[in-house]
Image (cartoon, helix red, strand yellow):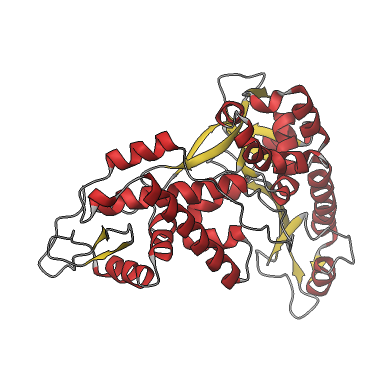
Length: 398
């Protein structure tokens, strides 16, 4: 329910003239709204019904509004939603900005239903299907003008109005953990964002339902726009091309760790093509934890003074800041590249890289234990002169 009004809140609603023009209603009977909302709506509707509806439908999604404003917001959001479903996501770095697509208004039956469900408002008796068609066109003209003035692509324009619109009409590749299945402990599901909920959150549906949702010749272009990023990604992703050819992309799948690793490795190219990749929520920043090899030089006071003072040298492999014991490290090195279940969590492992880093640093550790390492020698070690340690493979702490 809308918040209870206070005496200081402005009153602002919408009204229709006998000619079907939509404008602001500042009468005492208008609903009470917050000051900031009243300022935004007044600034937008002062430019015309189209800019006002654009503000309501694109920028105010998810906000609690009085019933009258909420009805007009939902009407305008239908248009924005339709635009999102007709503009395919552009590849990252593509400078070509797609033109605003032509979006036909809802059909006669749907418009008639909208008229019957409209809430009380001044001039409600003048609301009919013809008025809604005219306002739909006015809303499109307002978005086109806003798009042209911005100099940005349409995706950026809509994201600036509300980031949630950037997800509507987009395909998502979702990876989830499924520990109950030891042979295939991951699940894959391709979904698409149907629209936004009343709270402004993306509403997902399995990608297979898109074939029914977009059934009909009049929706064919929207379906092609939805699937274009998947087609684009499949051109450079062999495993995805096979899934698309077999129709597996439209069904939930059981995946092994190797198959999940395949998605993890391909995530950057998928996202560049316009597909949104969603990893398990437990993976921080969209990736599982990785082991870190740390070389600590000089944890104890040196045995001498000056540059030639001898320093101790210690190698440690840790996961999320916690040291791994010998058995855990052996388990990581004995497996294959990809995902390994360790300590109840999935760990991303490049086995050859980890083995090379550990081996090189342990050779240096053995040398330090036998002959000692001077400060100058330690600096040369850190610089990679003896023995070399790849910068990406290990971290060194003083």
